Length: 102
Image 1: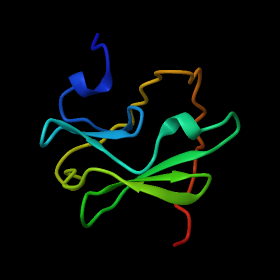
Image 2 (image 1 turned 60 degrees about the vertical axis):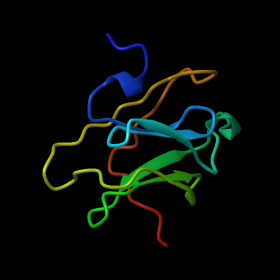
Image 3 (image 1 turned 90 degrees about the vertical axis):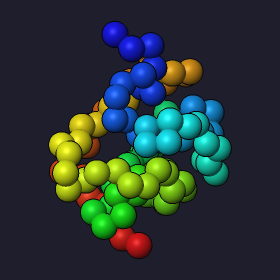
């Protein structure tokens, strides 16, 4: 069992006290969003774009952070992974969620 998500092959993640993990570059890079600002009841959404393979994060419906690019959306099966670190205790999936309107 890997200790954190970056130890799982072919993973891309945003969090890590304001950083993103890109398995293509194998680097943690600082981003403009820090999950420590998430409060109980907030909604965090993730979208991977079809054209660029870019991971986008939404906090309460507002885009807050572009993530890694080049995720192989058309050539690989993608699975959601949630790494609960820090004060996070649980995640609730929203079945049928749609992306916020730009």
